[in-house]
Image (cartoon, rainbow, N blue to C red; front, side, top):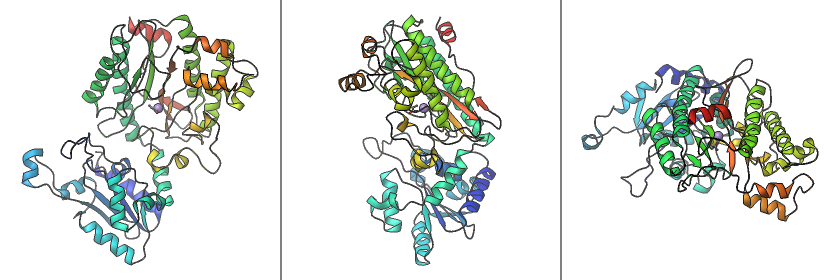
Length: 461
Ligand code: GLY
Ligand code: MN
């Protein structure tokens, strides 16, 4: 964790934002894989980590905004636990590391909450995504599990999002560390992707790098020669010369900050002419989008600019026809680019998505589109200094989507279906970087990872 003053300051700021009430934070529990004693890798809740820093299961915390009283609830380990787990810090000691004086047994939480309820005080909690924490809220507040996420505190959600959206220098260092681990993951993949190897061999080794240098992967690795499937977690294919492997993978730093990088690798070490033509369009969309990032610019504007670049490039190659403005306005380009340009990055790879994307990426001035493709844009509002974003344009040939649109004659005035048909086995290309918005512009985080055709091919040889 960071030094205790950082958590003290973060809570002080939150307290000032909230003005009154009791803030209830639930940490995560162990999550069993196939029996209770065999849990998945433990991951603490990110807002709990952000404000309290403690990285173990079985914890809760309360911040009384009116009095400033701060309490951590949990338990001390018994000698029997320690026989299996090794020496453990006491709850009091762990609370001290978070800058908190009061460490109380978890059973006390009930009493604190009941007293607050009796006094008619507001008790604020955040959206819950784990069933055991939904049940905890039910027990503490008597809210039916089905309604727990209806009674979350919008004021609390917005205060947390406002604070976590602007990354401090120590957070940026963490993300940069995670990108540098991703540098090792991605350059390893480039050097080791070879015809005849299985995807699993590379995906497994890449995950191993994330484990050995950081705190493992920041999300399940997407590594596939079928990059047209946006989130492809199947690793059973043998790679052949002429395939392209999409590697979308990132690491977690030791303090749990994420990176999220994508590169597309030609199996055999050289892109074909057709691959290169499409790759250059995606690369241009990536670099031009990054170049346009600065405070005050809406990320939706940059997404639409990337859509223009993609539509223009695909028109030049004969996949699209007609007026590019109209193609993008109507959404015909989304056959090839059906997702958003990027999302916030921080403690979560899709930062704070548990708190509600409508509050992270949208605001009163920025309403979400319903159009296929644009509707998936996770972040549309104005950029601010301190935002960390992914920028990840792509072009894909998705056979099922092509078949559907073709059968509906959808956008037949814009899409050259006979030409598209010839590319139905092409796969997909995505290129993704992690970018900090600065006072005057932007900065790509971490060591530059080979990205141009020349750089990728050079590393592979
Ligand atoms: N890296 C996967 C995603 O952004 O959804
Ligand atoms: Mn991403």
